[in-house]
Length: 473
Ligand code: HEM
Image (cartoon, rainbow, N blue to C red):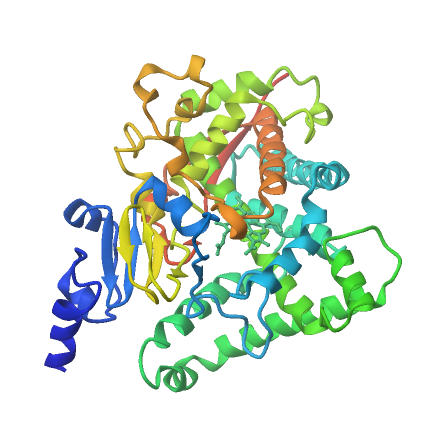
């Protein structure tokens, strides 16, 4: 054991990189919020793992670079659900990913977004209708309206993704309650993290099988079975409006050797999560910031108050609202939806990243949490300041030197988020309608602090109780 530890610390090809010795020698789980203050922007987090907190690392690690091979996804972390083939997110095979992205890309082009706009508006209106009903009921009883906005953002994003991806919503908004599939989402991520972590230890997988509570395994299995059954149902329904699945089903019909039902089920299992959890996190983060910053909220209100009616607030009419864009960008920066880093494996011969040579086989990633809180890139980095995102001529002097491209919540390059335009449209229309209809404030005896939330791969969100007050027009 002593030999193994000293060889990892002193003689390993990464031994020249700074980082805590304990981490360099072992796989002991760690928290890394403060480490860059001591070790600088490139830190050795584990025997075979480096983490970067520099803006140029986004390009070097995740984008195409002429004359360089791609650093592929680290398959320890990117794992398809048990018994399922790889999917668009988990595959490390560039050809498979390209094929899946091609099929998905038709659902995210400008024309598709135009077609999807009425769906987004319909669900945003449903949120407003439900909240207005609660407001009316409560005020008629002389009570204040306090609602858990975590629920409403989850309902909104889940219903939309169900509808757009597979032609049927989860009906969370109709029933004002969670669908069982949505309830187990948090367990799903915990399962991925535990499963990845134990793979670093010999015999870990067997141990995991023995240790995971039966109930959790049952829930994971039921999730997969539910998604698979939904897709089988959808395959049988031939005539319906196009959804994300349509191009995949056509491909399966025309070239079954290129696309199997298993691949489709695995891919859509992950799309339902990728397309909802992240958007809900950002919305919760944004609502929390708005409710805690009265001045920002009132500035945003003055931008949306010119709309003549709730119906006039559409995907198109909210596309170019400068201050709304700034609020959203700042929320995306401070409330990162995937804070855990996106690990990649350095190609066999090694390569240079942000000016540092890294040997082949090393797992590398960006540490967004450190990057977005770095004063090198953002003045008063911990402060919620949408003004830093305004166009140059309107940006306050103090933020003139901010390097905004250090914040890449959708990642970049060939594995970057394909759903970004949809996510932005979905969030903007919902936020504008909400602000047009209600004034939001925090509730004293139901505190919420973003910094207190647990963050592993994703953010484990707690209830966000806000007081709503109807705005007068
Ligand atoms: C605020 C909302 C969102 C954020 C912050 C976000 C962020 C990200 C990030 C960081 C990645 C890269 C993951 C990685 O490299 O492992 C990603 C990938 C992906 N996202 Fe999003 N996302 C959002 C919304 C959406 C939506 C609405 C969809 C719609 C279906 C979507 C679909 C996907 C897919 C399919 C991928 C995998 C792309 C690939 O690996 O080729 N995302 N997203």
